[in-house]
Image 1: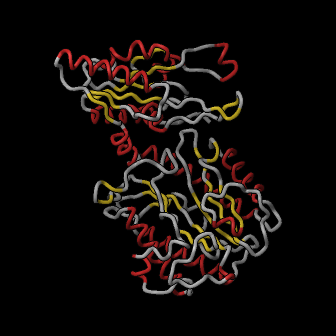
Image 2: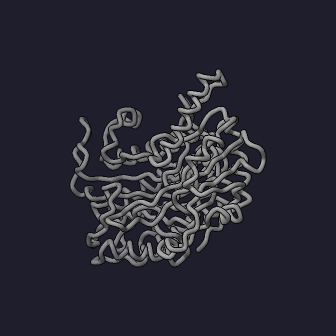
Image 3: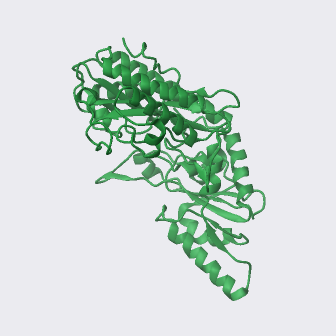
Length: 442
């Protein structure tokens, strides 16, 4: 499925970026191809910042954003030229004319000309916006131009010239999703939710985790996604207590739970990220039911907190409080709620945050705090809400807390949804993936 990215939206996005650069010239490289083994490469995945500004899905390109230049030469792309012999092996390239015709580049050059042309494009800029330490092939070219400009400042007494990172500007822009982006995220969530529903109705004792993974990822592909957004987690029983378990090769056992953390990525790179946990045999045991209800209550309370004026820390705090209260009621913790939270005495059972930004990256960019203050939630922001409980011997029990009875151990539960902040109630993008206690029992 080809990209359906909004080219008009990209033009407006580039204009906003150019305005915020002031007098700085930004240099944003594309991702390179990455070798998997020998002469085989991983499937290409574009750099998210580059994609955000260009919508161009080919490797080894460089975009220049030049607010100090005249109209018609502020968005310049350096790309790999057309090469029929190579394209027979690796697929077609757009070339310099193609990126002008189809991707909005005002000027385009072959990539090999970057070292020759960059200095001239930077003339008149106040400085360079470039992310140091991430682009080893392009960085020496950029730093050579910076050094030459600094030498020129010393000789001629011209205005200061400096290097800054473009990330704070770009990542603040990416934190707020536009309407067409949200439609893509709804689609990613819809496909991801469909896969979860199929998996829950398919899983049976005696199957292998890998069979469920295969069904999920087949669903992604059949419904038009690029593939999984990250390594799918299909974790039966105690494997669910390994947060990033991806071996996915153990048998599903009668009486245990299955935790599935999986989401698709679209051809436009927007992602779903959903977790559901359910009994493999269709019926919760008493302990599983008790813990599931605690996690579900924590998630529902946290979702209510995803409103303008709140923040990600508050979302996490309310989930922690509900979980600690539930664990106290079950006798897994002891003490007062406030002291347990203050002392982190619950973290052997709930050790991660309750969510993260979601967008072009699964763990998307954007600050959670600015100095001493948490970033307030505003309409257009998207994040996950994913509390969990993981009972195992992997973490030592804190001093003063009761040893965990064996009948609790091996239970790992997480419930995760993708959520849009609106000016009213939060919109749960992944609501098609069911999660009630009744729906989890078939």
